[in-house]
Length: 140
Image (cartoon, rainbow, N blue to C red):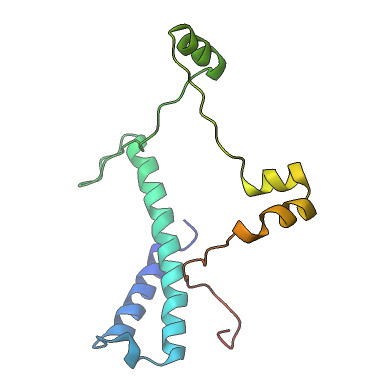
């Protein structure tokens, strides 16, 4: 792991000290919030690395109390779509559904200029959800 246990322990202690007695984030200065966010990112990354390492140890047979290896959820799929479609058709069913192409494919098909001429009135771009990311020093 990139950051050693002692370094992370120091960081956790610093975070705990910085947050000691602070119940409301609004009471912290902007600079204090920025420092805490920077430290928390290191801690989050280290935690992710630690979880990956722990999973590797469990897969090698080591016991970690309260934890186990599990498999993620997957969706079923055909090993061969063409063979599956043929079998389904032979059984008397239609396995196909008609679906409109996506905007990039339609732009390629029609050309951007023609696409905009025909579809401009019905194309919308929803606003993305706000997210926090590191910016310049001004916070802009």
